[in-house]
Image (tube, rainbow, N blue to C red; front, top):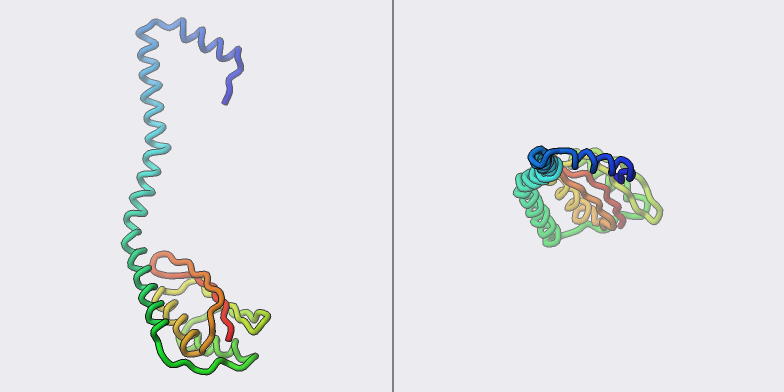
Length: 161
């Protein structure tokens, strides 16, 4: 914000018209107001955000460790079924969802792919679903967008044989 020269000149004239003691009091008040604005507008919000993230960190680390353990289990799990025949992928995905008592939006994509969208799912069930699709149904997850918060996830998967 730039002040026009006439207003700046008027402010300067007004300032020079104050007694030195009054200028000290006004300047001190200005410094106090500036400090209060900086504290309330910058320091306090940053401090609150930092405290919130600090409180969330142990839970997020725990969720990450659970997901990493699940990935390890998926990689180490054994026998697989043969890949589904062309045109049967959607039915295999639906059977997996039914077995896990999950509901999802399914969309057939070109190239024998199926998109699976679930808006809210506990992390434990995410791992179970991934394991069932990869190991039980022998489907390959070609795209996974998993976003989590507070122990649950929103996911979008694309699978193919």
